[in-house]
Image 1 (cartoon, rainbow, N blue to C red):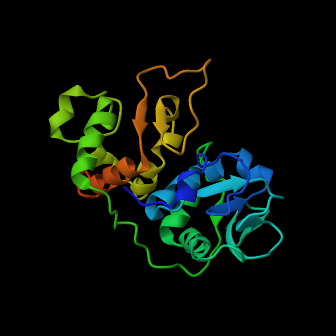
Image 2 (cartoon, rainbow, N blue to C red):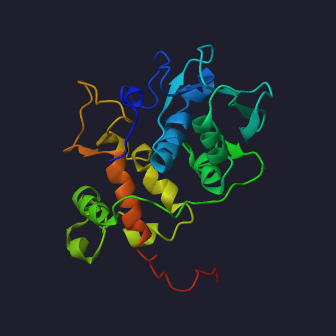
Length: 248
């Protein structure tokens, strides 16, 4: 388990809006970025890689990080009409780590991976790309296999061990490994339908409402277990799909 500082352990779930805690990293963001789900999609991916939790606050709240459209800070992404900047002046090393991650190749894929309507809402701003360490997942791959079979094997073929106990219409892990953004898909799987209806990620997702319980037995998982699954999936070879399809 990651050794978070006591103040970080006291944080509310990622994406919740609350008063700033002096002991951790806080991000002030405009309403538009907080309301459309973008930050809730991106933040868990960063936290998974680094163990750094970020609390999202109102734009006018005191914070160590601030996303702003006014040109102050490092340009990180755009939405066609606006270039959004990240101001890390008050953040320290953790804030710099987040800024570097947003400017890395894996950060770019996370930004482009937010596609609520099938198309990217935001695109990365061209900037110096830091070394991509995406493949270096430090989770326990043995535990990851166990968790994948337990949680994901209800629908997906994880290995040959559960091939006969899956839903045929869901892609196998081997097939998912053929996607160039497979790591982003796995890291933020709970934001992609239908997973959000039955998945609870500790310290990330909001509890199910009393009037909208999970339709099936909930899948309950921690970020450490998700990191372990990513480490396991890294060891799975992409499925051999044969020659590319051609149009006659």
